[in-house]
Length: 149
View (cartoon, rainbow, N blue to C red):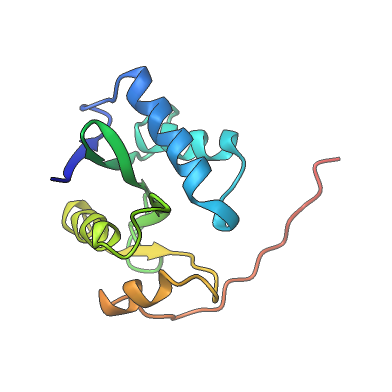
């Protein structure tokens, strides 16, 4: 049985739970992931460990093992930019196709106050789940990545 744990500024995970979620996302995001340090920053933002707007983290657990996770950051904006951005979602690579991602997405939608944006690569199979849940492609995202030198 899957249990979904919610972590927020007021319901913080233990340091071990936080490490499990960060490690899980780093491993199971696979080619759609980011460096572990960036994932940890997004989790810290959601838990309001920086001066920020906060958000929440969901961890789907089975027998105390993380089998799925979501990180949602609040943007502090409304209307012209959604109030929330779903930064990361992943399910265990051996558990995909069993409804865990859908369950996590539905819980994220239920918990988010306001609209939600997310970025998805065109070839990511999760894109079809997002579309089934009502997400649409309103914009083509473009980024200017400034060099850090």
